Amino acid sequence: RRGRTLQVLLLLPTGALPMVTGGDDLPVLALMLLGLVLAERRRPVLAGVAMGLDAMLKLTAWPVAALLVLAVRDRDERPAAGRYGAAAGLVAAPLLVASLFHDASSFLLNVVRFPLGLAPVKSPAASPLLGQVLVTLLPQDKRLITFLLVALGLAVVVVALRRRPPRTTSQVARFSGLAMLMATVLAPATRFGYLIYPANLLVWGYLLDGMREARLAAAQSASLISYNESRSTLVGACCVPPASAGEREGIEALTVAPTSQ
Image (cartoon, rainbow, N blue to C red; front, side, top):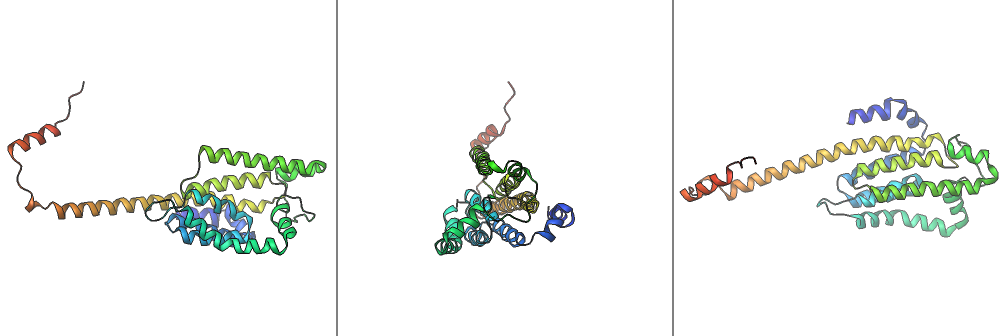
């Protein structure tokens, strides 16, 4: 799985081209991957710190940061959404709150209006994807089209979350990747470069599946070894008395295979 991931992200054009042109998306992706891996390794607090740092850098980190709440667990396999959320909030909230109170209008302009294409400044990297094409062809209905596209995207995500919420880190990666693919296509102010996120997230879902399988196999192996050791300790051959004739008959009766009807 690691070899295939390396090929897709570094050798094939699907990953190599965005990797050399991604700019500030690369550190965002790096922290996103770190957060997912820490969550898969059952380190909820460190995962929260990584995703909190990521959320401070760019809005594109927020979908993964939010969805990890549904999947993060501790080493005892207990849900750890509280610890994860507290760690992420303590890292991200101070900067977000300070920015909001320092200049609320600029905060809303950069965080809300600009990504929706409603700011007076247009992105020089705008690409002719579906959302951008619609608002270009119908500029007089730009606000209405933006509202409808946002409502459509949110409705699809809500329905998908209700029907099949992500419960593992690999499912979070795949769900986020598909959601961001849809958002990249539908957003009124978007660019081809944002496809680096779904490309990476979908491949990471495949990689995280392998991590999960290896972790479960290791846990089962450790559990079996522990069981055998405790059994050999508690029930040694020298300590087990021979079975009586009645006990042998009972054992034979229990182990005889039932005849078919």
